[in-house]
Amino acid sequence: MPRSRRTKNQLKKQTSLDLDQQDQGANSYNLSKLINEIRGNVGTWRSLPNPNDWGVTPTTQRLLQHWRSDGFSGPRPFFCQVEAVEAAIWLDEVAHNRIQYAHIFRHLEEANRDANPDLCRIALKLATGAGKTTVMAMLIA
Image 1 (cartoon, rainbow, N blue to C red):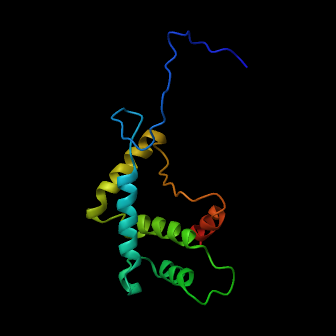
Image 2 (cartoon, one colour):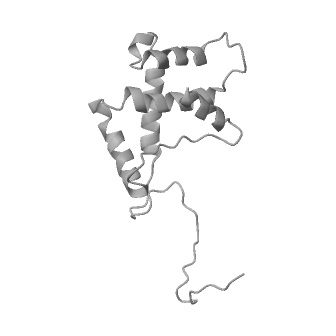
Image 3 (cartoon, rainbow, N blue to C red):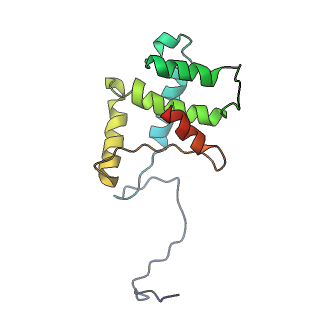
C-alpha cells in the first residue's frame, strides 16, 4: 500500500460521520426536504381517482392503469418499482411545466449543472434486489 503524501500535520482526523446534519459547506447539502416534498406531491397525485386528472399522455395513463391493476397476468411489479416509475412520470409529465413546482426544477438544474451541464439526470433510489432493471424497462415503455 503506498504511503500517504500528506505529513502528519496535514492529516485531519475524522471523529464522526454526520450524514443527517446539514452543513453550510459548498460540498454538502441535505436533500431530505426536497425528496419528502416530491414524495408528498406524488402521493397526492397518485390518489387522484379520475385518470383524466392525472395530467399524463394517454399512453402513460394506460401504462399506469396496467401497472396499478389487480388483474396482472404476468409477474406483478413490486410496489417500490411502481412508486419509482410514478415519481419519474410525475416529474417529467405532470410537474415539469407547472409554476408551483419551479423551485424543484431549479434545484435539479443547479445540481445537474454542477455534475454535468450537458446531461439532465434524476436519481431514483431503490434497495438492493428491488428490481432497478425492471424500473428502467417500465420507464422505457
